[in-house]
Length: 224
Image 1 (cartoon, helix red, strand yellow):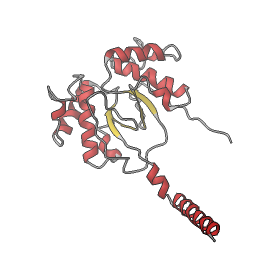
Image 2 (cartoon, one colour; image 1 turned 60 degrees about the vertical axis):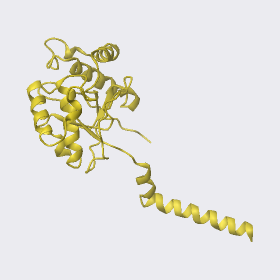
Image 3 (tube, helix red, strand yellow; image 1 turned 180 degrees about the horizontal axis):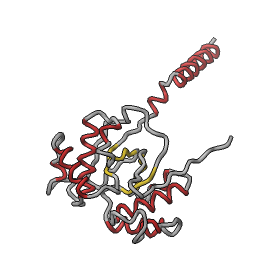
């Protein structure tokens, strides 16, 4: 009787787990995806400052003021990204709230660094796109960005970021690094680790391409 009771109990537990899994219960528990909003590395300074002013008129941007934990690096793309993300979170994480006239990117990777925390309340309000790209964290320093360029360009063609190339402008390290990092990520079968770059890379679900500059996206098909 004891063996029968244990067997029945085990069977019931397994049945419960099976039903929970197939009904989405366990999947929901296992899923802890969060999303953030950052500025596109291709965005010009005037647009970044416009995004910063708009977002800070709706959210508290005290942390990017001098003395705040997110003041450094004191760059328009970092400050704009921090403010844009706060706005995106407060508004409920809809794709439209990270658009900013086409200058926002939704990140699946946490942009936080050191003592600066980028807040996230959870996943996108709607289903995210399936395609992904890799860009540099807005808070990345010049040294790490240059190191990323040097490393990635050993493996991929970075000529579009050279003078006269379609991705030369804006002539910022974060744009040139992001282009190289993305191309490396794409040619590495979009393995998440290939967008890490010593914790300075972000996987995003919006195409960063703008104007004549194209950030490649390679689709991989798995054959069973």
